[in-house]
Image (cartoon, rainbow, N blue to C red; front, side):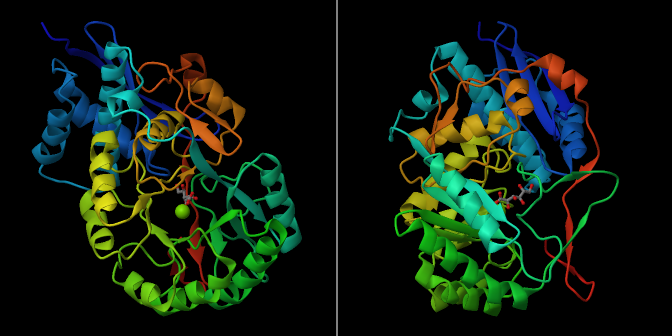
Length: 404
Ligand code: GCO
Ligand code: MG
């Protein structure tokens, strides 16, 4: 007789920040884990899983991974969106984890085996001003990192995206309401070339530099910015316009050869299709957790491969070590992979989710434990309970709300 799903638990915890974790246990006693965290909206995914998905999984065959995906996606009728897709993504990850454990193989072997010896990652350097940023970049270089995202303060703006007083930058803040940040396109656009010029001069030509504009510019502003930073040879310029307006990137594309990355807020292949098929981007940033898990992400990468686009997945600290594991296993076994974002985690997060994957010298390794190779420290997850937290809201100097 085939194995059956016997128990489904949803754990919401806050070891320094909130995580939603799905645990599926089979009648044979195999445990699979999935991440379902949507930063700032955690409880809605937990309810979606507890109230609507878990009851449907009990008694089903955990080896029917694709069928379960289709059942949850098509069977719900209401589809797409971060909450639905993170819930399905968590189930999918947990089922791949179970399959790997049953086979005694790490997930990357089930996905076709290694295509690279190590997975390069990019880290986050930031500073309130250029000297502080240069110091932060130097620290990352000392760790052997060769892909570095650079974010800096902007003169005249108090609180900006990507820069913090805390060395573990975390945009979501605990509290009943979001904090507010400032942004003003003109001053930012004039400042960024100075920042990138200083960093490029310090690191020389061989280090890959990245920058995230966080969805804030109009198409014309974005095109001007991409053109003005061309000489600094960015590895990518990320989220230069709001992600919904996909044709905006055609104007940016036509104006410059700065490589473009977008997609951390996309959830399905249909969100990515136009940009990939029209070659309007170089890197697709969907995260395995927010884009329906391993099964669906593989389809996105396959579509991207046909059009010369590479994967460059989202990997901030709100992607739990479980989803990070899934992403590393995919990176190890997917040919058209560019780079994995990895900003590291506070120690407590590593302790809450002991993992076989590892990071060293600017690269990640999936490890050889069966499945995804992540476990749960239930004592930590139980004692660190959910705390209300929100991502910030951004406003222009005139007080109007802007994309954060
Ligand atoms: C990135 C992102 C993050 C997100 C955050 C939202 O490129 O790492 O833009 O900083 O804003 O993960 O939850
Ligand atoms: Mg980003």
